[in-house]
Image (tube, rainbow, N blue to C red):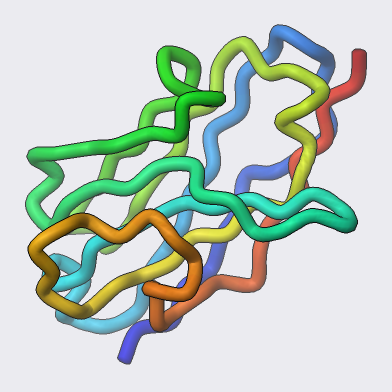
Length: 126
C-alpha cells in the first residue's frame, strides 16, 4: 500500500508555470506506475499524464501535450508535474495516483488506479 500527498498548487495568471509534487510513502514506490489526473467542478476526473515505473516512458492527454511534463525520482519517492503556459481551462483539483498492477497497456482511466492523494487546487486566472 502507498500513501500519496500532493503539493505545489496555487493561484496563477495565464501563461505562468507551476510544479506539482506528489510524495509517496513506502519502500516500493518504484513498483507503481504513477499518474496525474484533474477534476474541474461538475466534471469527471480526467487523465493528465502518466509515467512508467522506471520513468522511461511518459504519456500525456492531448490538452496538455507540449506544456506539461511528468517526471519521477524513485530515490525520493516523488512524482512531479511541471506545468508551463498555463491556461484558465487548466483550473482544477489535481490528483496523483498509483497503479500497482502489471498491464499490457498503460492505464489512462481513473478507475484503473488503486491509490490516490487528497488533491491540490490549481487556479489559473485570465
